[in-house]
Image (cartoon, rainbow over all chains, first blue to last red; front, side, top):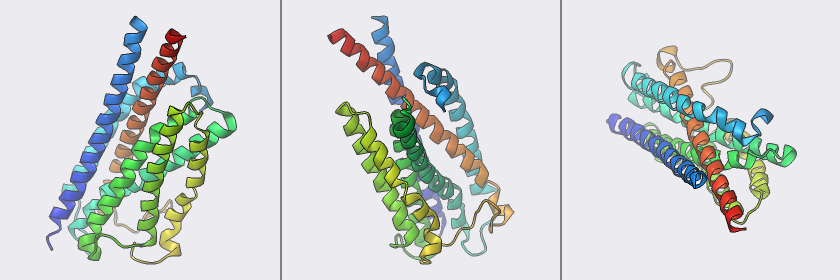
Length: 42
Length: 237
């Protein structure tokens, strides 16, 4: 059994989920801090 | 910990820390994964699939460390009524759930060529799956409690009770000697040869920094949302 497709699949899943976590956290932070700043300027 | 109880003081620490954790985490995780894929020899028994170790072990550590963080935040909330404890628990949970999922998926992918099966109801695998479901339950419970205006005490109790699963995961390979191999990396040493082991600290620290950055960003988001909600209440009053 060729092991490389399994290695590549494992790394792809780990990288994709980590990137999704970081991007989602970053987007929610920017959105919330943007809303707080906009409200403070009003 | 108590020095950061003040949200303004916490934000003065969290704003620069988020960027640094992201940068350091990204650099170390990429370096560790590249080294693990290209610079280490295959294992004499597992062959090339041993390379999954460099992502599977950090994700297992972070899945468990995340719940330890939730338990610590729960104690802090229930005993000292730390104002940021509930926010910290809610912020850590999605990152912990993500890494528990990565641990389960990468372990399953490793198991197919190594054990000949994607899944086995083995003590370690089952207790790790329970941890993942505990995370989902915590996320649902904590957000429901927050929406109802609660202080998060029920979620904190749940976080403490769920911590019982952590020693079960750790000792599962000793209590139930089924398919998952025993402990190969301990505090005092490792049974893995250094020629294979050396990129692991890079991915361990790298993914831990990314976990920390994600948790800090979620805390900052929750604090900003709370500020908006408080302002809207004042405007409405």
